[in-house]
Image (cartoon, rainbow, N blue to C red):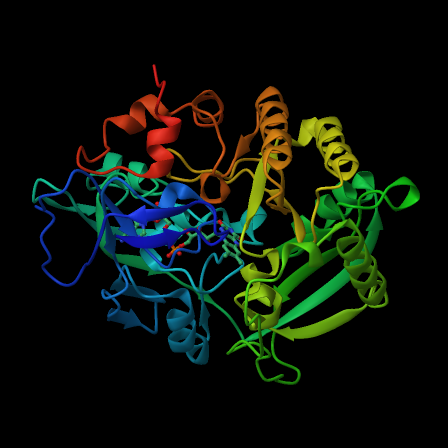
Length: 436
Ligand SMILES: Cc1cc2nc3c(=O)[nH]c(=O)nc-3n(C[C@H](O)[C@H](O)[C@H](O)COP(=O)(O)OP(=O)(O)OC[C@H]3O[C@@H](n4cnc5c(N)ncnc54)[C@H](O)[C@@H]3O)c2cc1C
């Protein structure tokens, strides 16, 4: 038995078996259930299968082809986004969509249909996947595109690793003028200001995201920093700040170092320092704009041995009042942490049946694990999100009930037809428990 855990340390499970995938590997294994496993950057039990076997994709790490004229890249599913960037950026290409860490595998990113700071303009990753091969436990190998095996294509994008094992994928990359991003930062106070900034910026800028303080009350309630960015000709090439983490957290912090006072102090310091650049334009290397957390090695140790929960949800634009109530609830609970991220999702639909992004405003934040009190808060937030017709993100979830899941993902009945009968996960067993 090997201990396996999510990026948030919760849950930690005794994983019965783990096998590496390599070329021509066979899925006809004598185990109860199988689940592909990427680089475990999910904060969720959707990347764990404690009752069965994990199939590691990291050995499938070869590039197959890269057309520098068209920007079409074909690679095996265990290739990391960081490896892709190292290859393509010098040739003036970029990932069409990237999450806030570059240490994810292609297979893992497709299975969660990841989104980035450009959702309002480019949608989620699934829109930029041209094709992939899906290996099923009955020995079939399906070539999936929007036209060939379209149902498996659609079920596998955002399909949480349950439809089979992706061996390789073909991605349409984005042409860029340089590795630099032109960034405009604006400080805001309150949700109204955020909504209005986001609406204006999203017609003009390819990327946008805001950092939000989830601890302050009164006139400082929902203050934050809004960042809008675009690829740009490099005026001056700043060397990457975070190609390799400069700072690394050497051990799990004792829990008591992280409390309401330290978090509040950090948020105030961060806001006041960065507020100085409000209204200014800066030029950043793509690494520091897209992947600030990758610059701190093992940052998840800050929360100590007990780990943390990340909660990410989206509610429709019309539910601004709900978003306000949710934020008030978080602030009142005193459980909010730093690093809350607020972002607008646009209306470009994904081919993925279970894809998380949908039009609205999305908030992601960490809660240190303080036991039942944290779980109770998350359950209450889930209820509010259900009520508002929104959704929580499976890649960041360890608490969602089966009832909430069905409300968030109405295409679940259709999706079930494409699940590989030998595939399962801890997440899936939990949310499908009472599936009608
Ligand atoms: C700092 C940080 C920032 C993040 N920011 C964002 C963000 O902005 N947007 C966003 O969308 N996500 C974000 N994430 C979440 C992350 O992008 C996803 O969880 C991603 O799917 C992790 O990829 P992985 O390779 O680590 O896969 P894992 O976490 O190991 O697995 C994820 C899923 O992929 C499946 N899978 C893995 N390989 C295959 C395969 N070969 N075939 C089929 N299924 C497979 C697994 O079964 C599992 O269901 C962030 C995570 C971190 C740590």
